[in-house]
Amino acid sequence: NEKPTALIMIFGATGDLAKRKLFPSLYQLFQKDRLDRFAVIGVARRSLTNEEFKDSVKKSIAPNGETDSSIEEFVSKFYYHSHDVTDSNSYSALNELAKELDSGYKLDGNRIFYLAMAPEFFGTIAEHLKSDGLTDVGGFKRLVIEKPFGHDLESAKVLNRQIRTAFSENEIYRIDHYLGKEMVQNIEVIRFANSIFEPLWNNRFISNIQVTSSETLGVEERGRYYEKSGALRDMVQNHMLQMVSLLAMEPPISLTTDEIRSEKVRVFRALRTIKGSEVNEYFVRGQYGSGTLNGKDVPAYNQEEMVNPESNTETFVAGKLMIDNFRWAGVPFYIRTGKRMETKSTKIVVQFKDIPMDLYNKQEGSVSPNLLVIHIQPDEGITLHLNAKKNGQTFGSTPVKLSYANKGIDGLNTPEAYEKLLYDCLRGDATNFTHWDEVALSWGFVDNISSVWENEKEESFPNYNSGTMGPRKAEELLEKDGFFWWPVE
Ligand code: BG6
Image 1 (tube, rainbow, N blue to C red):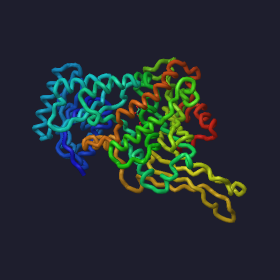
Image 2 (cartoon, protein in one colour):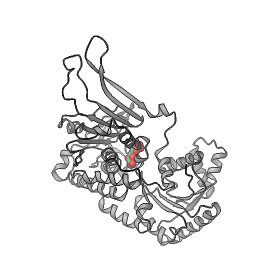
Image 3 (tube, protein in one colour):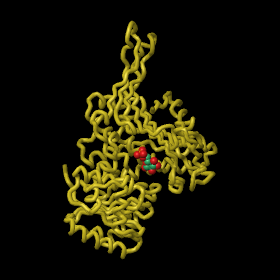
Image 4 (cartoon, protein in one colour):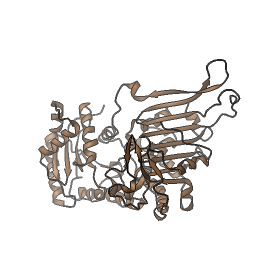
């Protein structure tokens, strides 16, 4: 139960992420008495008084306006600095405020710089933090950086070089909020703490693994960003590949940050490169058309605000990944993710190989493959699908499910991913953040695909209706291999 002390500067403090996730998560940590001495400087362009800023923080944690002494005490530690990201004078003024708070609150010279704003300024800010003296601290200094980390490998390298002028690799916390999700963190525990799974976790016993992250939301107000990004950059380069690396990694020799990250990096290195004419064999792209979701008519992607009516941007990706090493040779990892799909759900299905012969197929009902389903969201838990005898005068088999629901058993609300990640960063634990090598390798993988897609207009767009599980081709991707997507209900 470490209780860290730090000055936290949030760049982009008037933005959506700060209000929706960061302030409420910090408040949770405060309420649970996880923090020792701390103060927060909200940094953004807009000119606001400290009082106005405190009010907006209050609103973000207590939207109904009810307040109590704990909320009042929490927001009393918040300050605001109106900032120009390109002006050295503005950084100097910020530094003065930081020094004042550091001595006033006895923050031991520890500083966290959280960049929760437009990515085009990440590099500039990091450089100024150094040149204008904000990184000259007596304690620790850490940079927390939101996605997107670059747009492709080249731009990610440029950004990395810029931030490395001011921070060393172990001071950089690249956020992938999926790594803060309870059940994503559970992947390692399920694998490495159970003798019944790890011996089977390889190409002798597993036939394929399916990772689905479907959303019902459309592109909302993010058309401008999304047009340049698409689902491949927005979801696959980071969240989807991160989940695959946790599923595929070798057991680390210990649970230290370095050991875990280096095992994950080895997965990325073994990921088969898919390029040129192979891309459309291994990957499928989709774009949503109009449709009905939860009883409401919703527009097609190319009718959304800030989206080109002729857009070639994908809002859905399905792909087959191969990991060319001893453990996984021959086992496909299928991934799919998209917007405006039937349900909001993130799930992993591990399908085990069929038993050598099905003795029960002459009886009523033949056996089904064993599945291990890891429910990431909205339900959290694990289900193991087995076969058991049908009741009564028969030798037939019937599928049964053993289920563990995270919430039901622990009786606690799972902490928000951001709460865990913020706490990790304050304590100096970078395990659940992405190392530069992971970022670089995953961009390399994704760039090969986007370079083909960007140069080939997909004439069939829009090719799936809102409220469905994506284009037909995504089904064919598995059918070619004799598999199908297990339902995510
Ligand atoms: C973000 C993407 O990283 O993840 C969004 O930019 C997406 O487009 C979101 O909606 C999904 O996160 P979650 O936690 O709702 O699955």
